[in-house]
Image 1 (tube, rainbow, N blue to C red):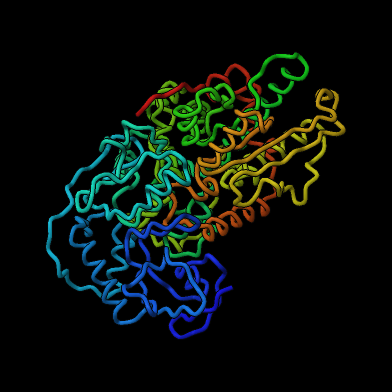
Image 2 (cartoon, rainbow, N blue to C red):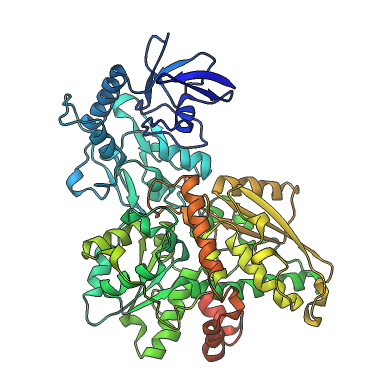
Amino acid sequence: MHKLTLNGKMVEAPDGATVLETARRAGIRIPTLCFLEKREPTGACRVCLVEIAGARTLMAACSTPVFDGMEVLTNSPRVRAARKQVVELLLSEHDGNCQICDRNQDCELQDLASELGLRDISFEGEKAKDRTDCSTPALVRNNSKCIKCRRCVTICSQIQGVGALHPQGRGFDTVIGPAFTLDLGGVACVQCGQCAAVCPVGAISERSHVDEVWKALEDPSKTVIVQTAPAIRAALGECFDCEPGTLVTGKMTAALREIGFNGVFDTNFTADLTIMEEGTELLTRLKRALVDGEDVPLPMFTSCSPGWINFAEYYYPEFLPNLSTCKSPQQMFGAIAKTYYAQKIGVKPEDMTVVSIMPCTAKKFECQREEMNDSGVRDVDYVLTTRELGRMIKEAGIDFMSLEDQKMDQPLGLGSGAADIFANTGGVMEAALRTAYEIITGRGLPMENLHVKPVAGLEGIKEASVVIEGTVPAWSFLEGVEVKLAVAHGLANVRRLLECIKRGEKSYHFIEVMTCPGGCIGGGGQPRLTDDSVRLKRIDAIYAEDEGKALRKSHENEAVQQLYKEFLGAPLGEKSHHLLHTKYKQKEAL
């Protein structure tokens, strides 16, 4: 441990700690615009400058290691003047259009300028060239707003392992974007939106569908229904200054009715449906492999995350046969809504508009895939992120926090606690185990409070195994089998896992993959800025939502059982195969 002084107070810090990390542990705030936790600092923004006794110049706190006897001032007149100058220089070339920017009042640069007391800009210079990239269904880039902090580069290359964004050029002419200054649509971008989630300004954001949704709601010929993903209820409150992890399920439902949706439903319903289909698919593959001796693609991977599907199509097409053929819960909902539900209420599929509220920008891409129209029309019409819904509620003049809790409509509004935990990394695996184990053995999962702790938490790759003992006769071939499981979140971790499998170092039966760190609770469309402390609070809230429900297993969802009885027949049956399953193909890009 090193002893040093921060603003005259003695503190201790471990070897290798930086000034920024030490100050944060001591409760001293040093502003940054480029820093991301647990990543190598870039020192790009220079906002975190501090004064260190004996140093000739001010030093970047994010990249300066501590040492014994160090004396640091984080708020001296020299430091404040330098930070002001740095921010003024950033603003001098930043074509922000703050009044109409979608990051207005949600902008780290704007907040920092206010915090530093900036009232005018001393420097007048050339503005960055305006080049707007709308080449993907999910994201919009505007280079004139970019402050070259490189957060997007860090998260795309180090956390997601995609590397679609790079700094190019020098000095004022530096551009952050795809290679050769191509548009995102021309490279292998998985459209996860993590770049938009960490961008401190409005340089990268989701492609908004708010205007299209308002237009649909105002069309008397349309029946407009909405589905809400489980991760939304633990994050939407942050748009209204709630603590991260505040559950707002009932208020969210009430707000959606106030906005004017004809039906407010829960993606949890089709998350439970996904468990029925995907679980049956896994058990069928195991039977074919263990009993019939077929060469079946194992391990089987979950297919709920569209960013992961894109990643596999671009980088690991050899694993495409291993993907579950199940569509995601979002797409299953659209297909069921425009067939089963439309028939129930006497509405033609073409006269129904399905809107999704998702934590994920890649869902905007997913709903437009050519495979997603098995209802006869486009299954899901529009996707709004959590942030977009927050803006829409404010635009409607709704006092969100004063709303009384309401329940979702039926039958597509009933979901189990197992469906809730789809929001968390490890949640899909746990939900599948709750059902599969009970089907195989006739007994409930022998875990405390039904939680499979080895697959929970924020470790990048998690492993577990379940030894099947005491099977019912239909599944006797699994008696004594050790079913090996893995969970990975964040695509760089997924890449590591896939490479281990390719080298023969690891062997599994079933693998859950989530694109974003922490799972959907850390999705690219969630309120900013999401760090591990925020992820953990949202994860805890989702587990609390699960534990507070009487219904906690997907196969016990009465509405799903009724759906099979009235419409689908059986899991993996002819109708469910047509509506709920698909396949994917290799993609090529620069």
